Length: 125
Image (cartoon, rainbow, N blue to C red; front, side, top):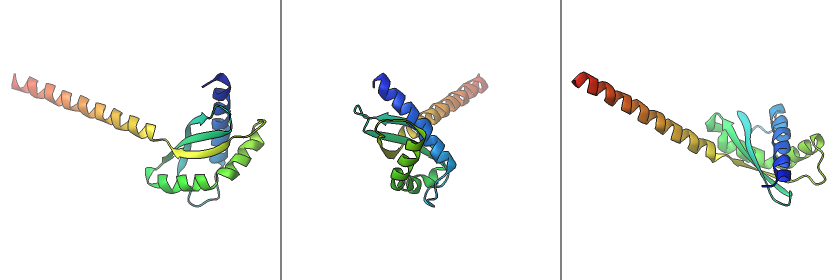
């Protein structure tokens, strides 16, 4: 990414998070929605907003609601930022966070197992 696309992505992330914090009137959008990262195309025409939803049971329905409200969110964000051309927004669930969480929990489980083995060794000797 270039410096310009990084700047646009950062600005869009902050502005979109402000709009989502105020809330949407769509009943499908429930829980806490956090914009984790933004990918902006090289021509600045499209932006993919990666989001996480807490609690996880509301993820699928909330993402449908966000996608349906993307035009309204785009207009609200455009009111808060100054771009010559506002990128089209699309929302996706950030699966990277879930993968990272799985890896961290696997590491923590391995550490616990190693500690149990070390304690069993001490008891045997």
